[in-house]
Length: 171
Image 1: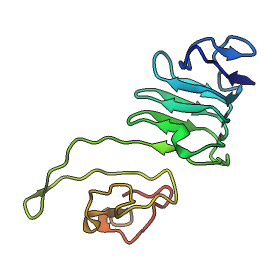
Image 2: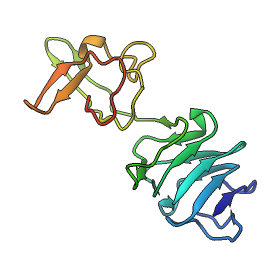
Image 3: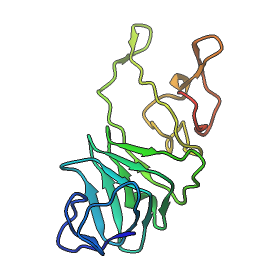
């Protein structure tokens, strides 16, 4: 096991890991008890990760954090942040995660001139339960009539009636 309890650094890729000063790999379970950021240097890996009181995890672009099994966030969603164009990969599709995370995605400004030109962004949903439309939705500036889902059977998009994302579905 590896424990991040450093008060002198927040860099995942430093040697502040305990009990030995070695950055974790895919064979090590990780406990995070102080803020840590995967930013500079190499990508990160762990067998499993648990965010404990006092800890937080931020994954910045263009970094990737690969977890073999589960992610357990014992705190609020803002304590695990996946920045735009960063990646969180999970090898075990049957692993059960605990808690919520915050995933941010920044897009270029969209052209929205009804009847003339309307840009779009295609989202894939790796999550379930996130509200799709409205003020509390995933994209609060998008009019409800412009929120579509993809139907693979005929390769077309249709206005979605889904009030929440469905895991694995494209919008």
